Amino acid sequence: MSKYLHQDNSARFSKLAAATLLVTLILTALVSIASADGVYHSDHVEYHPVGAQPLRSGFVQNIHPNGPQMYAIERHTLNGAAPNTEYFIQALIYIPDTGCTDGLVPFPIDYSLTTNGVGNGTTLTTLPPEAAEGLAGLTINVRWQLLVGAPDGPVAYETECAVITLD
Image (cartoon, rainbow, N blue to C red; front, side, top):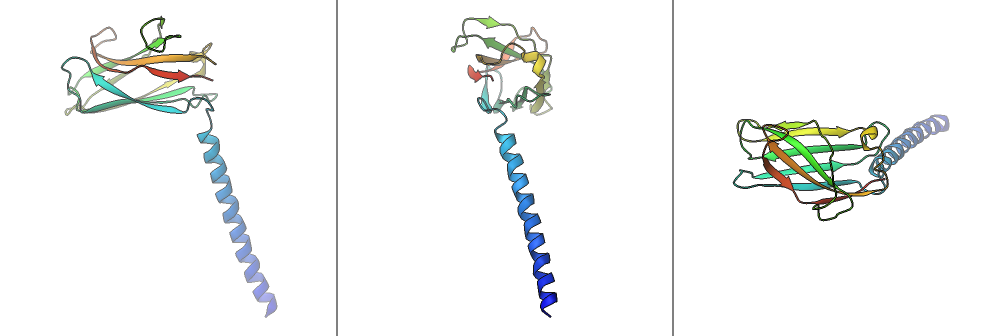
């Protein structure tokens, strides 16, 4: 009888040890992901309408994992904007001015966002490491704009100046 009890406890211990190991591995992976960028993790920057443009809410979620295949990810979202409209994304980068007024450095982005029939839209933009070459260690200042209908169209929405420290 003692033999059967020993096997039962051993099986329970093995299951507990396996579960503990699995939880430890998951937590380690989550900590590694969360600390992928030790300087700048992410930022939620609100879009504001320019002029009389309609907008309930809008934002850029700017994430910098600084990985070997993806340097930055941006999610641009509009809610209650003009319906059925294409907006071209423009990032105005300023070095070293923290007020986003002097030192503009051109930075082309080839992405757009199109709203649906009620004015909602979202898009994901990505930046590979080679596109950010030479920026490591800098503090840059960015103002995002959404331009109506064309890359040189009028500004419909823009963000405040966001300070980003790159590593």
